[in-house]
Amino acid sequence: MRFNITNIKEEQALAEAASCLFLDVWGVTRDYVDIRMPTSQVSPLLDLLPKKLQSSHFALISDLSRAVYDSLPKDSSSSHLLGPKGALDRVHNSLTVSDNLFFMRYHPLKTIMQWMQLLESIFPEHVNYMSIGQSSEGRDIPALRVGRPDIDGGGGRRKTMVITAGLHAREWISTTTANYVAWSLITEFNKDPVITKFLHHFDVVVIPALNPDGMEYSWQTDRLWRKSRQETSLRMCRGYDLDRSFGFGDSSAHRQSDPCSEDYGGEEPFEAVEAAAFAKWAREQTEKNNVQFVGMVDYHSYSQQVLFPYAYSCAVEPPNLENLEELAAGIAKTIRVSTGEAYSVSPACDAALMADMTKLASRSRINEGAGSVMDWFYHDMNAHFSYQIKLRDHGLYGFLLPDEEIIPTGREMFYVMNQDFNISQDEQRQTTTVTFAGELNRGDKAEPELTFLELPLKEGQLNNKMAGFYRSGYARADDTKGYAATTHM
Ligand SMILES: [Zn+2]
Image 1 (cartoon, protein in one colour):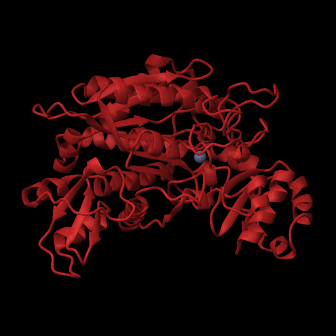
Image 2: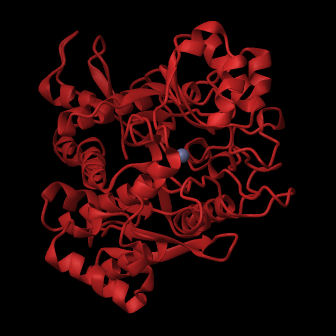
Image 3: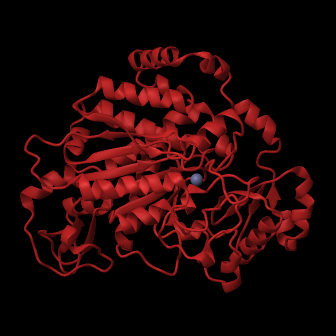
């Protein structure tokens, strides 16, 4: 059921009522809130709402179980019956017959892991398959490291970007999108000069199923399962919300303490096994593996939003807010240009207002977004850029996005990687830059990571090159001083 909202009061009323009735909130944007509920709960909910809201709603998906059934892969039983070898053959065929065949439909975890291993064996020189840790039920959390340092790459830290997906089990499109981006990077290496250069300078670690237990459960038992499958203090309510389980911006006052809640992140940070495994892996990378994390993108669905830190509070500004905002706007623009889809841009705290009564009481927008991986990675791992992108759609199918949307969604996210995170401009930049010890622009973070460029600018003028940087979100133009500080990723 979708409620159109026009102000924060309505949002609060809705949040309160939904929480009262233990309803599952699917999506929150500035314009609407989507709530999943049994028909029997509709009138109790409406009774709790102000008059205006009682009429500004409609059923987005009226028969959910039917929609779930319709969305399920019709030949899934045959794919289950295929042993590992059979599945692998299918994957192999997909890879040889057509690049995109693998992305014609969703796949269960097992097939995805086999596909990932196959990629490593086909492209051993720039693809590495690994497990970053184990889930609470003992499954591997699979990952691909994609990249190939130049031979003369120097001894510096390896700049690395991380793509995570599948933190919420039912958001299948996030997993396929991470895989699509990985696949595109891998197969464009040594073909597309921009991607080739990119992968010489950066590693990209893609973790498409950070919640493998939940994903499996969503395939086998409950398509709309969100959390992990770890036991909580309440036996009948399993699972942690992995995107509330990280240790930043955390405060018990803002923590959902009911294990039955869809947003339950644990009593303490990192109680969730998968969140702890990811954090341990990331720390080891920087401490022992000479990695420098520069950015993260965490895919979710749905509602087409590009969200940036912080999620835990709107009252605190991230140090390089302007960079984050600009690149977010750049990402949304790239998507619009590439596929015509509209993605909105906002701080994550804006999009996570619902369901926290302490916040409602204090009337601040501090909220249940505490403990997100995006915030933690941004702050604790010093990643200059960190985003959560909520993928397609706007709610027509919601989490049950059809197969046909897999490739277009993957494509628009690959465009983003190609356009907004590429470093082709950096190459040109090096020929003309003069290191300039200027002052920092407001909001710039991590001084040593910044390179200052002196550009041949007249006051109030952007030359093409700079406009390019500016558009790409890399640079802050300071027109009056005529130089830009740009992140040296
Ligand atoms: Zn999610």
